[in-house]
Every structure is written in C-alpha cells, then in structure tokens.
Length: 175
Image (cartoon, rainbow, N blue to C red; front, side, top):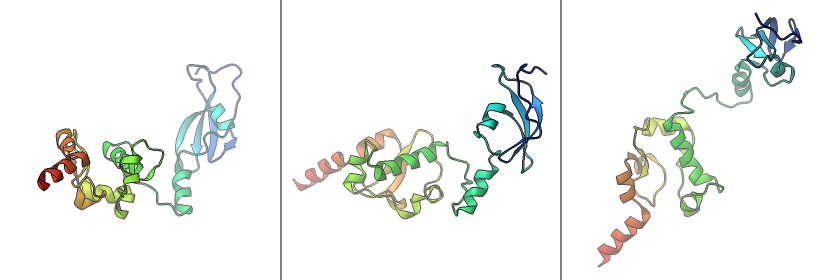
C-alpha cells in the first residue's frame, strides 16, 4: 500500500455519518484517502480532504432520509438523465422559465403545462418513454401541453406543424 509520507491518520474519527476505519492507498496525485463506513453500513474509500472539509457527509442515505423528513417525495424513477426526462424539463422550462430564450414563444404566448405533467411521473404515465429520433409535439400548435394535445413526432411532422404553417392554412381556407 502506497501512502503519502505526510498523510494524516484519521482512523477512529467521525465526519458526518462516516466513521474512518483505516487508511487507504493514496490516489494518483498522492492525496490521502481513508476507508470509511457510513452509519447505514455502506463502505467507501474517500479523499481525506473531502472528509475534513465536510464535502461528504454520508453515502447518500442522508439525502434520501432528509427528503422524507422535510416532506419532499424521494424520486425513484431513476430516469433523471434519460432523453424523456430531458424533454420534460425542456418543456417545462419553455413555458415557466422567463430566462429561457424560447419562453417568448411558449410561456409568453400563454402555452401552459397541465397540472398532471408538473410531475415527471404524470408526464411519463401519459406519454411513455421518448422513442429515439422523435420529440414532443403539440398537435394544435396553439394549445397547451397535455395528453390530448401531444404526441411523439419526427422532424418533418414538427416542421409542418407550426403556428405559422397553421395560420397560412387558415388564411387559404378563407379564400
């Protein structure tokens, strides 16, 4: 085991929910590391600096528990980095975030997200996972984001389904 000669021995000390049980091998940059055990039983090797500076307090069990204690529902869908979740976040941002560059075309024009879709689970239940190569499309480009008005569509379909295109069609019908 290679340890830096000035590595501080933290064995027996407690940092948040971590208890240091032994010194571990230094990393490639010769930073001190220690094997720790979380109160929930999880073992992990952690940089000594992160322990001492309070950058790590637990294996993640604290965040889950504190979410329950403060009344927030712990997310369990496991899809936070999925294309479907990114689509959902982008949809909400366009309609609700005044700092989003596309807000002027959505939120400012009165486009809303239905109440059920404010939670990812509701959106997923109605739309399912995003098929590869498709994106979220409003059937009526003047309507809101809701189950009855949305579908997964390809680029060609989306290009033909714009407000400008819909207005041209209505003007042609008036002739």
